[in-house]
Length: 108
Image (cartoon, rainbow, N blue to C red; front, side):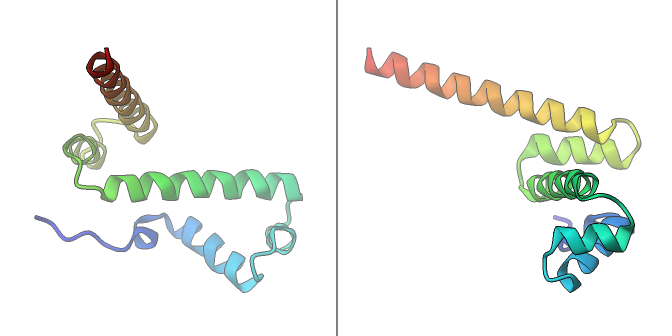
């Protein structure tokens, strides 16, 4: 099995730079926005987007076979990351619905 790097190391250099700037700003979105020369709402949106990318990176770290398969497709340029996230989300929803159905059937 291939060893995975730290989740932050798998983010883009731009995302890593934003995290460094955010930490050096003591977690102040206001100061982060000032450093990037944008408004607070714009920076909040950028930060939310970065958080989502980090969540996806962490989810891809799981040893779930579907996640690893999708990650391979992305690495080979055969699938866009946003499409992979949607596939994974739909799969997880279907699994949860199936589990709920099984619980209901067992309770009946």
